[in-house]
Length: 402
Image 1: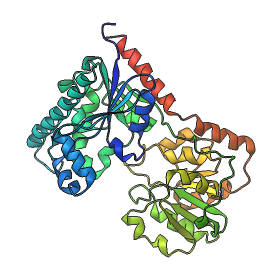
Image 2: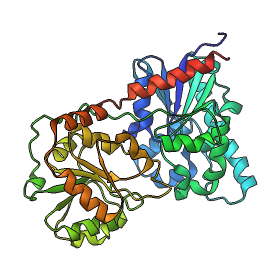
Image 3: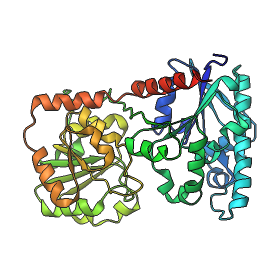
Image 4: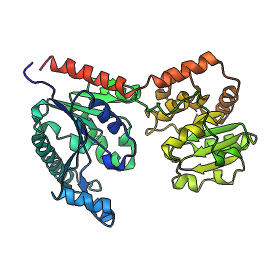
């Protein structure tokens, strides 16, 4: 083998500093246990300057984009974070394909020029680095042209081309980016199947979940804002967004079953804020909670639900909250989507209010200890280590042919 894997360059959708919790961040940490990793923040675009310039974070990002400050910072023994020294044109609104393509390539060149500087500074050889692109489809189109890595991987964890921001250009660009990559990794079989029409080496590597803080048999104290809500409690924990969750279904279930208390835990976007759910007596909104508070809330629910809408945006989505529910040993009901099949027989699947009612009634029955333990083991088995092992296996396979 003439070229050896030296480091991973992980191109991320989310900034490291925001620490929102993302697959890219988790994968970077896991990869860094065996290889050096450079986590690359998204480039700042011109539109963001005007939106963020009044904030300390925005001013810091702008300075780094202009080359003032330290763009590459070490955050652990084998992990660095790079903020690109480049400003991208804000072009997603452009409908002229030729102009868009020209400016998108300029964005891509500036982005990879900055990464090349960081790699050189770290003493690595870019031709011995593997690029792992977390769905940055637009810049990813130019990975091989402007960076020439050892290998180029593309990661799909959501059907982003169905999102309004990505739909117009993404539906055209992402298939090209997928075709150019050496391998595609996805966190569900559905997304891997979709990618396979553009790149034969497309694999479902599953999903990691940080289940260490979810302990089913720990005696969690009951939160004060939950204590005065009667049982049975049917709960959802996560971001409350009408793009992904079925508000009408929740309304129907709540109205048809007034003795059930529907407990919704998490921040609301506008569709939930304006929904009729707020007028239903047995629906309770408890607001946002810190991550370390969630186990205590889940522990004191009777049944956990994931009432997803079935649409192009959600159909292949891996629901991480299912792992959290199961790790806490909770009976779980979810909308029947292709991504949910892997959780059988540990969950009850349903479509529509009538099926949800029957599934919740079944979930409210006393748990069988053996089945509960099997569900916990299922969730605990979904680790980032297992995902990374599959990435390394493909890397080894491809390098044997180089």
